[in-house]
Length: 478
Image 1 (cartoon, rainbow, N blue to C red):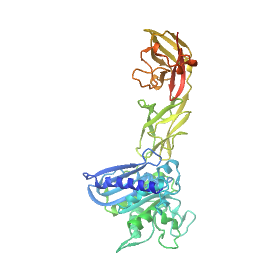
Image 2 (cartoon, one colour):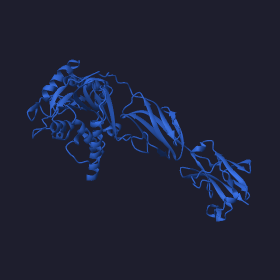
Image 3 (cartoon, one colour):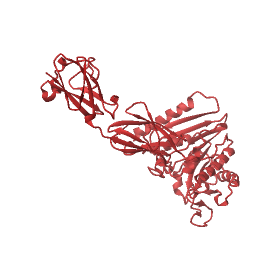
Image 4 (tube, rainbow, N blue to C red):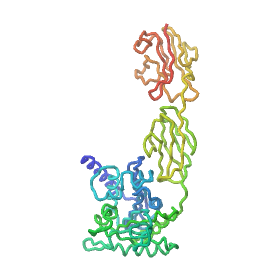
């Protein structure tokens, strides 16, 4: 474990040294860094640099995978152009849990910040988040929480233990050296402007102080959270922004999140072109799929892809009306993210395409049965062509010159399988198991161990695909 920790930390230092010491670019510009690419845990980090330098705000979404208001809101910010200041945006901190629509596949990632031990992939992601906190002047963690926060108890959905529709901080104020961070004062400045834009007073957001730093806090679990770590370890203002899971309209959750984020941007003098809060239902347009490493073909949603047992497929492109948060899962093969992976299909299955945790497309993968009797062998002996089918025997004499012109099957592409004459070695001396279109002197076929019954007279010609024999004929030498 110590060695793994050292290797990972060295990797992080290398990545960030590239960021720090790379040649400066002309502002404004954007960068995208991807970790654990094409896995269920893919982590995309977007860095936006304004035309003029200024404060850096870190927006984190999707640390808990069943809170779409947060990660879909964060997803609106990576394409901004900034006039002043900088943004760090991670829309989907816990992509695996988002795909599974789970709070956390490996437990709650937002309770991993109290330990330095690297146990699994979640801890590695947390270490990256910690590094980015160290570059920031403000940290915002986006969530959807149950109910509606109220300072006093009203009912089971509106009370001090509910988190929805709130801006959360671990303290009212935090003193670091000679400076005081006025968390509650900042939150109220934001809330005053946000609530003016919300017409329904039942949806107004409120400041929630979890009093995490005091010994008898009612929320001791917050000591392991991202906001507590950012505040106490880096001395930066840190807030959790919670819309309510009880709001049925997803677009409304996204809008409320963006109201709060945009007011924090103004408070810290980060000037963006604000993203449009328009949520379009995600849909699959098409997939590009390569079979057995051949040129990818276009497969539309709801179509059936006919394969043969042992075929290898690779999804090379997902075309959707969204660019981020896409995954492809071939059921029973690979894992929850099978994009850009070469996978062998041995049984009928389905290919599911998701945007975050929402199913947007499905392709049926069907396995056709190969009828060995339908293989046709095109042979040439001393310039004369003839055809044979599975199981037949071609009679030749010593000294005859023969060629295997091709082997055809109505359901298969000839390039997808090999045709091997057992006991024959091509002129180059390197046997790849593919013997089509060589001129073969029957007199050279004397390798008895490959002949039928070891008598040196009858040699099989076999069709092989992915290591499996599909058909054979025989060459009998008089």
